[in-house]
Amino acid sequence: MSSRALFAPFAHLMKKAGLHPLQVEAFRRHYSRLLQGERGTLGSAEIEPVGSLPHLDQLPAAGDDLKDQVALLNLNGGLGTTMGLTGPKSLLELREGLTFLDMLALQVQHHRTTSGGRLPLILMNSFNTTRETAQALARHPYLEDQGVPLELLQSRVPKVQVSDLAPVRWPPNPQLEWCPPGHGDIYLSLYCSGMLEALTGHGFRYLFVSNVDNLGAGLDLRIPAWMHSQGIPFLMEVADRTEVDCKGGHLARLHDGRLVLREVAMCPEDERDDFQDIQRHRHFNTNNLWLDLSKLEGILQRFGGLLDLPLIVNRKRVVPADPGSPEVFQLETAMGAAISVFEGAQALRVPRTRFAPVKTLEDLMAVRSDAYQLTPDHRIRLCPERQVPPRLRLDPEVYRTVEDLDRHTPWGPPGLRGCSILSVHGQVTFGQDVTCEGEVEILAASPWRVPDGARLSGSVRLP
Image 1 (cartoon, one colour):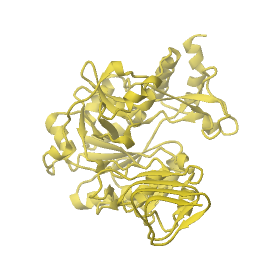
Image 2 (tube, rainbow, N blue to C red):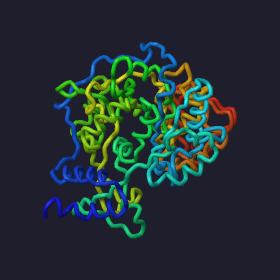
Image 3 (cartoon, helix red, strand yellow):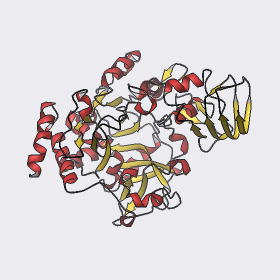
Image 4 (cartoon, rainbow, N blue to C red):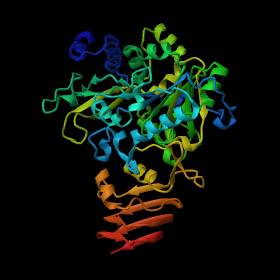
C-alpha cells in the first residue's frame, strides 16, 4: 500500500476535526518519516560537545526601550497524570492557596505595575486544558485587556497504532485516540492561529516562552536587550548539568557548527551513558526560550509555515496507565529543537534559580518546602544558601498521587533547607515542624508518624 493510501484515514480524521491544512501537512511529513523508518535518533558520532557560553550575569543592564515590545507565552497543555491528577497541572496548589497559574498571573501583574510595561500573557493550551484554565483565569480579570488573545490553542494529532501504523480506534474514550504533537507545535500554532500576526501588528518584537510548571522562569529584560544589540533571532536558556539533570535534553553542536538539542528520546539505546555524561555534555535545556518575532515571521513565510524540526517518536500505550492497551506511536517535536533552524541562534547560561520545574511528587514536595522561597515578584527560587535542590526519593508504593503527598504531609513538607538527600521508605507521615539535615534515610516497616518538632539526620530505622 502506498504512503498516500496509508495516510488517507489520518487526513480524513484531521480534516473532520477542523484542523488547519498546514497542521495536516505537518503531520503527513512526520508520518512519512515514520514509514521510512526514522525514529528521531541522534547519535554521538553526529554531534560534538559545546564549549564555553556567555552567562546571564555578564550581560549589561537593560533600559526601558523594550518594556512594551516583549510578550510572555507559557506552555499550559499538560495534565498532571503522573501525579494522579486529571486536570491541568497549572491548577495544582503550590502554597498559601495559590496555584501555579495564580503565581504566573501575579507575576504579570507585578511586572506591569513596577515597569509600566504592557506585558501580555498568552497560554498555550491543549484540548485537555482549555476549559478548566479559562474558568480558573476568571480570578484574574486584568489579564483580559491586553490587545492580543489570552489563549493559543495547540494542535492535536492522531496516535499511530504500532501494529499496523493505522489510526488508533478506542471507542471507550475517543479522546484517547489523539495526542498533542509536542511543544514544537508552537511555531505552527502561532502561524496558523494568526497570533504571530497579531503580536507583530501590536508592536511586540520578542516573545519569552517557558513551561508553566517551571516556577523559576521569569522575565529578564537584559536578555531581549542583548538579543537586539547582537541581532540574535533565537535564544535558549541553558543551565549547568548536575546528576539530577542527566536525563534531560542537553545542548550539543553539529559538525557544521550549528547548535542542536538532543532529547533522551532521540538517543540510541546503546548510547545512554554518553547522553548522561555531564562532564562531556555540560548544559541542559531549561525550556526557557526567546524568539525575535520578526525573524520568526520571516523564516515561517520562507518555509510556508512549516519548520523542519527533528522528529521524536514516543512509544506509549493508548491508555497510559493500562499496559494491556494497544501500543501506539506519538509523533512529536520539541520547540527547543528550532535552535538548529535559526541562523545565528545562541544559547545563554543562566543561574539555577531560573529553573525550578515540577515534574514529579518529589519536585512538588521540594518547592513547597523551605528549600525554596517566594520572591516579591511571585516566583519560587532556591534559598540563597543552596546551589542545587535537595534530592528526594519517596516510596512509589506509598506516594503515588498528590492526594497521597498531602495526606502524609498534613502540615506541609519537613524543613529541607539544610537537607541534601531525603529517602523515605514505607508509610511515613510527617508531623509539624519536622526538620531534615544532611542525608536522611527513613525506613519504616509499619506506619509511622514523625513526631512534631523532630530533627532528623542519618538513617532512621523503625520496626
